[in-house]
Length: 426
Image (cartoon, rainbow, N blue to C red):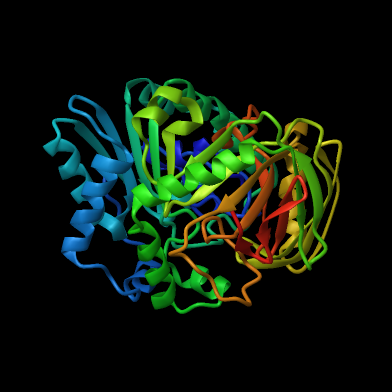
């Protein structure tokens, strides 16, 4: 699945359910948009989530205040869209109260896995190409969107027709661009770390360990993270050629000279608001520095050792890159066939363009040393992807992409190591 502002914006605005409600690797293209709704019944998966150690009422209130006042920088008179799922009702309601305490106006929407699935399978395919009118209207009136991307199922759209998924994703592109063009500030809480049983299993962790990593990542000192992010941003902005290697066979070079470098540090600052565009997004837990390549310069091979497509493993997903785009793809495992079918159903050549490189800088988030399934924010993490990259400062708004997490990588910038075997050196 691609990482794009449509994931965050639509999840807030109209309860969109992406394949796993996160910006994750190869979990499928953008899935159907579903309309705003009142609170829905809890799904069966909610019971599993309840087993995760729950933060106290005080901690949830403090988080809500932090999201509203620091991350989103909500101001009096603004309209704030808030969304999530019923299992997080307390936090969602806390956020709404914090918004109103500032004299701003919250609009709360709840969704569920059951509703998301029914909005795809129970709705005629003749509506797949409809552009979401409500989403466009909300982009026009909203100032801020805060979303808890807390889907509890990784195979929510198992059995979905790949052509229908591609059509739904294509129809969402206009809404994603509307949120970007209208300058809506977007805060996504989840960022591939939201504690769920299946995600803990993927990382080789217990649910309690994943919950601990998630909350430690959220509770980092944002001011310190901001300072660290600016240091790394400056170093990358001053360079030209990145070279990424990994024991799994990844060997990729790309140029980044004069490309915009962005930092997700948990706060949409006044400078970010002045810059606009992708600077108006915060992905929490935060801690990333990312950029896009000089078009046509990426070349080599990317190997994603282990990923999943709707709960089914894909081994050694290998992308050959030449002249800045995918020229061939191979993979093994039970999930590869379905993933490739969905990839092929997206008939837009922009999906093949090499899109971004992302560096994790959050020291509070760690995964087991032997984990082959990586994620965005741990310090020293390296992530690359194709397709959508407007969130990273690029101009490719295709609502699809392939993301590869590369834990344990070594990266040089003009020959100097900046990440060495998964350890950040800057």
